Amino acid sequence: METKKDNHIALKKALEARTGHGLPSNFNYRMMNRIRLEAERQRKRRRFISWMSLILGALSLLGIGLYVVVDYMEFNLTHHLPEIEKLPFDELAAFYWYIASLVFILLGFDYWMRKRRRKTTHE
Image (tube, rainbow, N blue to C red; front, side, top):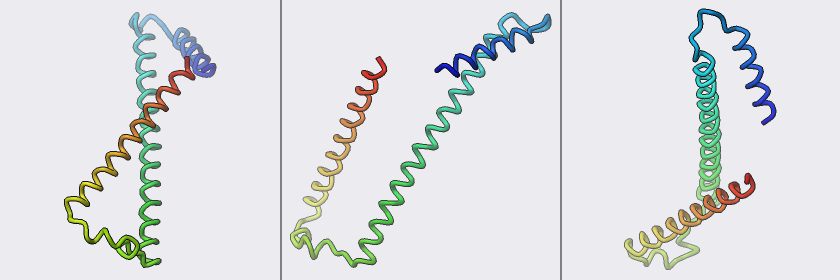
C-alpha cells in the first residue's frame, strides 16, 4: 500500500512539473485515470492467467491420474462394484447428477465462506 501511495505521489509530482501552458486543465485527472485503468486491466489479466493455469494444471493432473489408473493398472470399476452393471441408465444418471450437485453446493459453500472470511479480516 505504501509503494502505491509513493508511486502515486511521484507520478503526480512528475505531472505537475511537466505541466506547461499547452496542456488542458484536466490533463492530470485524465492521465491518472488512464494509468489507473491500465493498472486494473493488467491486474485482471494476471488474475485470469493465474486462474487458467491453475485449472489447466489441475485438469492435467486429473487426466494423467485417470490415464495411469485405467491403462497401466487395468482398473475396471465393474469388478469392484458389480452392482453398477445392473443399474439402469436412468438411475445411474440420477446418481451422477446427485454427486455433481453435491460437489457444486460444497464448492459454492466454500466460496461463500472464503469471501466472508476475507471480508472480516479486511475490516
